[in-house]
Structure formats: C-alpha cells, structure tokens
Amino acid sequence: MGFELVVDAIDHRYGALSVLEDVSFTLRQGEILAIVGPSGCGKSTLLGILGGLLAPTRGTVSVVGPMPPDTLNPFTYIFQDFALLPWRSVAANVRLPLEHHPLSRSRRGALVADALARTGLTDFAQALPKQLSGGMRQRVGIARSLVVNPAVLLMDEPLSSLDAQTRELLMEDFEAICAREQTTGAYVTHNLEEALHMADRIMILRRRPGRIREIVSVPIPRGERRGPAVARDLHRLHEQLWSHIRAEAQIADREMTDG
Amino acid sequence: MVDVPVDGRAPTHVTFRGGGFAPVARPWISWLCFAGAILLWQAASQAGLADPLFLPSPLAIARSLNELAMSGELARHFGASLVRIGGGWVIGAAAGILVGSLIGLFSLWRSAGLPFISALFPIPKIALLPLLILWLGIGEASKVATIALGVFFPMAISTYAGVDNVPRNLIRMAQSFNVPFLRIVANVVIPGMLPSVLAGCRISASIALILVVAAEMIGANVGIGTLVLTAGNLMQTDKLMAGIVAISILGLVIGAAISWLERTLLAWR
Image (cartoon, rainbow over all chains, first blue to last red; front, side):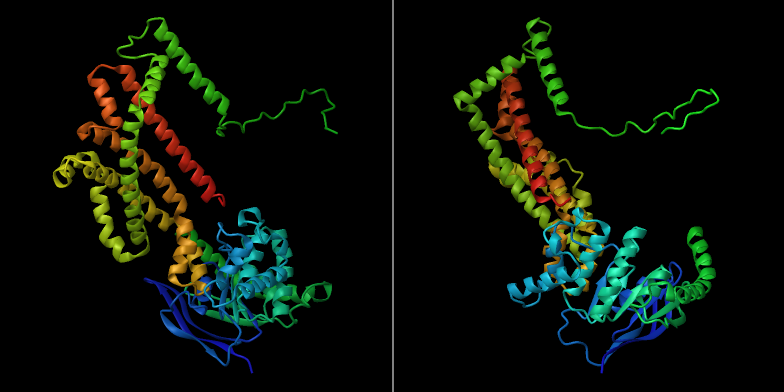
C-alpha cells in the first residue's frame, strides 16, 4: 500500500492579497497531477506549500501511509529557472543535495554518476552551466532531483523557459523518465499540451484567489499519448480545458495589465 | 540569385544603421597614446617650454626614481607605506566582510548595523586621524587604524550588497534539499557574493592608497607620503614626481593583482 499526499483546506495570503482559497485534493503515489490556471492564480504558491518552502496561512499538507524508505529528500523541486550554481560543474551541482548526508565518497560518486547517466549527462559532468544550452541545464536540474530518489517531485514550469523545439525534445525525455521512475508529482504549467502529456489528472485553478475549478482525468495512459491514434482525443480534451481557462485568463491578463 | 528590377528602375540598397555603441579595447592604441604623451612631454621639456622646477621632464623623473631606488631610500619609504597599507587593509577588509556578511544574513544585524554604516560612511576618514592620534598616539597604530576605517565601510557595504544580490532562487533550491544553514552560506552565499566583494576590494585598495599618503603627510617620518611632502617642501620636484610615479605603479600592481583574482575566482561568469 502506497502513500498519499493529502492537501486539506489550504488558504494563502500575501499581506492583504488572498492568493489561494480552500484548496483540497489528494495526490496518490505514482500519480502526476498537473496544476494549470490563469496567471496569478497561485499555482507556484501552491507548489511551494506542498513541499514546505512556504507556510500556508491556513490548512495542512500531510502524508498518509509509508513513504519510500530510501529517499534522501522526500519532496524535491525542479525549478523553472533551473537554479543551478553557476560556479559548480554539472557533477558538483548534482552532488550538492548529497553533501550533507552521511554517505561515503564512493557511494556519493556512484549516485551522481547514475543520475547523470539516467539524464544523458555523463559526457558533460565537468562542464559549467554557462557552457550548456537551456535544455541541458534543465537536464542537470532533473538529474539533481533524481539523485536524492524523491518520493514526490514538485515541478514548477520546468520547460517554460526553453524554446519550443527544446521544450518538445525535453518533454519526450521527461515523459520517459517519469514513466521509468514511476514518479509521483505535481506539475505546474501554463502549457496545456505539457499537462496533457505529463499528467494523469489536471487540476484547473480559478483566477485569484485560486480555488479549484475542476480536476480532470486524462483517460489515455501516460506513455501512449503520442501518435495519430490519440491525437483527436487529446485535442478534444485540450479544447475542453482551454474553454474552462480562457475567459478567466483574459480577465486575469487585464487585471495584471491594469496593475 | 538576387532579384533585380527588370523595368529599369535603379535599386536602392537598405542603409546599415546598426553600428557603434560597442566599444572594443585596442591595447596597442592605449600604449601608443601613453608613449606619445610621454614623448611630447619630454620634447616640450627639452624645448624649454616647461620650467623643470614646476614640471620636470620624464627623463629627470626616471633618473630621480633610479637614484631613490639605488640609494635604498625608495625601499625604506615604500616598505613603511606597504606595511601600513597591508595592516590597515587586512584589518579593515576582514572586519568589513564579517560585519557585511552578518548584515546581509541576519535581520537583527541589518537593523542594528545599517544606521551606523549610513551615518559613518560619508565621514572623510582622514578627518579622524587627529582623533585617532589622540587615542592611539602618533605611531603606526593611528595610521593603520585610519586606513582600516577607510577600508571597512566600502568592504562592509559591498559585502552585504553581495549577499543581497545572491539569487534567492539558489538559496530556496538549497533549502528545498534541506541543506543546513552553514552549508548554504559556504556553498551558495559566499561564492555568490564574491563578485561584489572583489569589486569592494578594488575600491577599498585605492582608498587605502589615498589614506596612507594623506596620513603620512600629516604625521610620519618615513613613507611615500612623507617622501612626496618633504620633496615638495624642498622644491625637489623631480623627487616629488618620482614619489607620485611610485604610488601610481603601486596602484597599478594592486589593480592587476585584483584583476588576476577576479579572473581566477570568477572564471565561472
């Protein structure tokens, strides 16, 4: 029996500004939940609360059931801007989360080498981040998250700062990695296509203050969402999701522009 | 193949408008201009256009510098100044980096320390020398303390600015992996603040140079400042200028050393 991440009645305010209101859901082990919604609806705030980087104004996040015993960092983030230390090599960036754990040097080296191999970075171990393309930098971010064997992967728009071609390429690899690792995760994105490829369920938040509008299941198994056979179904689902978001996104855009 | 109009109209090419605003250093021009200015100065002196009492020729200055070096006088004065600069700079920089780091890292230190720094930083530190002489005596301590005070403030300011400029996302990233506080300081904050601290070193080194000369002019028997002041009082303008050239060379050497440090420690940029 696996674990569940139970999010119960989360509210969050920044001063007088209410960003999240009464958000409750359950994330099951092995499931990826995409969180989508208009700009400013509190997606990233919610992700920060899930992993303990932000304290909610009200509500709780709790784990029910046993977490994998071999995880070195149960809640692990992948950041939109990669968050790599520019003065460290690729291998040293991936090693950072291990350095405060009581591991032997050889064990640490083996874990880093394994994470680099799983993300296709072995040949770039000694490169500095500035020498890598955006896609390769995010691979380093992914390798750094895998090295700690996370129980829950919290992904904050991991592909959004990449150009369209790189995003497409990395998304294919990312899908494969998540399937292979049987990742449990929350995936924040603006991009419905990413959500439709990566997630088992898609949670739509209303504009500020973010409240859950709907949670939609993607009826096609992950890993079988490419190719003409499923294109029509995915397109229909895309249209359905977009129709839910469109009007609110327009209003949110005007609110932000008006300041 | 380029399309050309077939009806006899003359083509008008689009004019390039994107040039300029991209200065490129050309070292040979720098050296050429520098050498040209020295030659012009020498020529003007030889032609009698400049009174050697007020503006000695470059050759006379070089001769005087050589004499000072050969007699050991230059080493004596230079050595005394270097000890003062070294002592004052090390004390001031160490204290500045420590206090700047504490201000950058802890709200309590920031609240308590910033008003003091804001109030005391604008005071010209050489104005404090008489007070420091009163407290510490006319010996080395007052001069070293003046330099240390002059170095402390820019180092503290550049250090806490450096801590402030460490991208918060890097700190959040480390926190997300439960990296302990001191490890975050060692692995994220210190490397991240280094560019600003080295910029502070450059500024504070030139301040130390100014202060040592000024302090030696006010109360010292030996030192580059004393050499310049004594030569000026005796109207030995070539010796005076030789002292200034020596200070300038010292400044260049310090600047080159900091540039080397920047290239070595900040190669990741």
